[in-house]
Length: 290
Ligand code: SIN
Image (tube, rainbow, N blue to C red; front, side, top):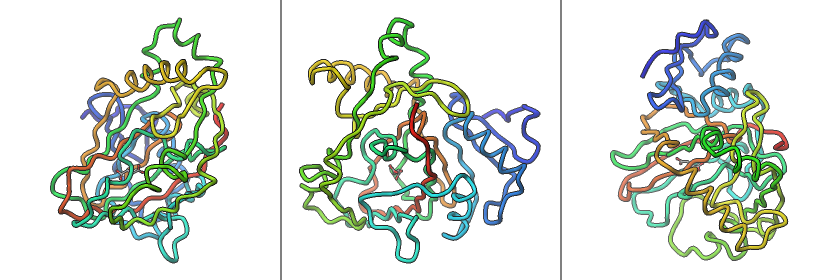
């Protein structure tokens, strides 16, 4: 990894990942409130790199909550019971004896079925298994930019239909699940609903365009028949998840990871049956995608 030379950063050190997608940020203690200049630099680096890791941050729940608030305020996390006494924190705990598929094991951008999906998700690693449990991220900006101008023009007017139904709906994956799961998931009729967002969205900070679809939450395209939408979405899902656009995050305990849901998708890998994995997760509220 190369250290970023930009004079833009006076308070933090930003080391971009070798692939050019994602970065590590050091030089901060996130257990205390950040001075305004440092916070502005963190926001800038996060917008520029999409996925930023803060290693060696032994954070309390309160410190993670405070940093999430400083980044823009809490998002709304539906369908999962929060931690007692911490209504904005989800504890992603998978016990060694759990056999249910690990949470997040499908490509998605968090809560994209909401009218204002969260701008960021923050995940703090408390217990990392000795094998497996990586999180993969797709750079949906570069994926968009690598499409031909003709394909970009074809996608420009389209609105993709998003729904939580395949996961949290009354006939979704979790409704049919029988295996034990520590995470308390609440299947709901509300999850069967849907809404649409631009298929290509423009990042409010960088102004760059990104594909905004995912296999878990995108269920159609407005104005297209099901087979037509399936063909286009199938192509886009395969295009997005090419190795060239993927960053694999290998966890270390006490790393805080923060990703931008407006221009990335992610996938939580399994492969750690027999081991505990424990993360604390918060979201930062976002805007209506445009
Ligand atoms: C998620 O999709 O939010 C979970 C990611 C992870 O556990 O790595």
